[in-house]
Length: 383
Image (cartoon, rainbow, N blue to C red):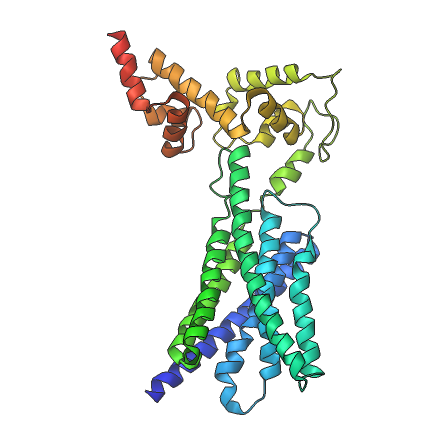
């Protein structure tokens, strides 16, 4: 039994050590990359991974160095408090890569945790003999943990807003939903909550080597999950910045700052006519990954202006506007029977729908019935 425990201790230490080394190397590489080409999201990801990696020193000290007679309690305490930064840092990172990103990052969300960290430093190295400071320190650490959990749930809410906004502006969002980030934050919240619950209900379980080994695997798995997906994540915000700086043949001024419409040059009605021409005559809606930025560039205006015009004129968001054109074309084809060799799904793909489920869902929303029933009703009318 002791041999098994020794093996688990050794494996846990090795896994944490490997995760620590890989995390620090990867974090440093990202920092270097950020130095070469400044990118706020890369910077936040690198800091997050470095803090996460340093947190792996806690189990190494507790498990692997405990029997060596080394007093590392101060280091463990500070690293444990430093780990409270993880959820706030990840929140800032997710916000920066989301469609809701702003040019300036609000770091105020980190202030409570940094305050707790500084208080712990003062307590450990100056006032560790003062009981009242110890009580305050413990209370602050508990509040810091609760604060981290609240930020974690705020991240989930942020991701929901991100996806909702994507549906408003984009017709192809498969690689923009940041589902991997949601998976991490949900698993991370479960990991932290489970750890707290077990420590409160079964305080002796933290000494169990099997428990420590399982928690080590989960923790390192989460670190690698974020590192790998974060590295390959395509930043969403570039769609709203870099593309808006591209000058079209109709556009003589940069559109990084939303300009006011000049009524004497191009009225809203003229813009709507050009938009309809682009959709109907040029069949712009057949482009599966058409975005509001593509359409705005085509018209030579800012995407936000186009969104406001569509909302005010049709009481629709961009995605609904595009799908309406697609459904109208499907109905037109079904009624004319011009593509009778194609299935209904085939026709949907031809007009720009990305998936069968998206087509069926919007068709029923628009007509009140399914495509198949609609087609049958047309046959009955012809009879």
